[in-house]
Length: 182
Image 1: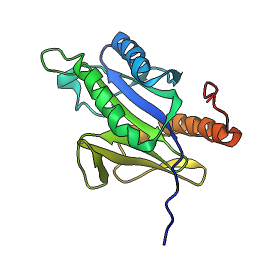
Image 2 (image 1 turned 30 degrees about the vertical axis):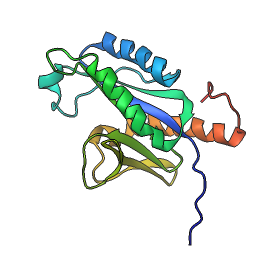
Image 3 (image 1 turned 60 degrees about the vertical axis):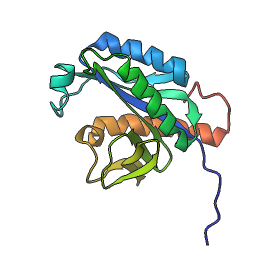
């Protein structure tokens, strides 16, 4: 028989992409107002592995990944996804999204994304939100799974997530309350 244990808080991350680079910066500030300070922002990246969003959002698309200073309880990703959906909806033009926000979290074992879409590998949480197991940590690095989006399986992106995870691990080892260095 297993004995339930309290779960550790996890590192909140998000992906944002849009055809409008300045909108990404504006939305990062909005997210900070709701979710707390951002402690890391990736360089500007091309979002060009798919043209799925081009009709709705325009082309070319630019992406940034971010992480937040404040750790979260894993189950709070549901409420965070609902917050980011509200932010996305606040920037609709003619009922079309101008920005896509994909929040998730990094734990020591995995990277989870929040999704409103069901699929075989997604686990229902609550309020219409699913947990998408995107990457697993094994043998010193994050590893993609058969269903991992190609951009999240990219070596450079995995490198970003490894750095974020390492900062999170160092924080846990120190047991400090200030995450500004993570």
